[in-house]
Length: 118
Image: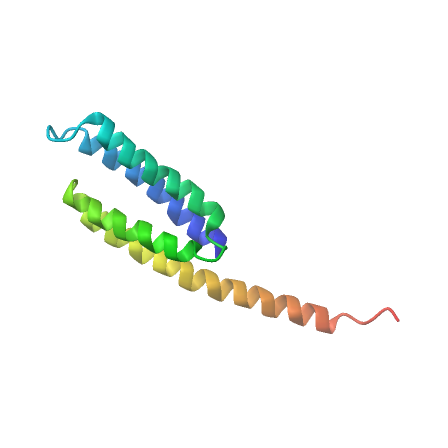
């Protein structure tokens, strides 16, 4: 699960950075505000790569997805990209867990089929 979720989060890192560049063109927003918000969101993406397998990591990832969709209020295209990344996040969590379960079953089978040395 960690690999799939981390890949999604790194993709989001870049999308948030590019959205910050687009948001800079809005005359109602200061550059400091845009880059503070974008920088915090980008930092959270990187931080969540390490926390995704810990308790609450997936929930924090969902919170980031909601925030990414809500950023569409500033950069309208982020509504679309936010929904796409939320779907990718769901797939990463869902299929990542299935892969982890399959790996655990395979490891258990390998351990049970190994003859004891005694």
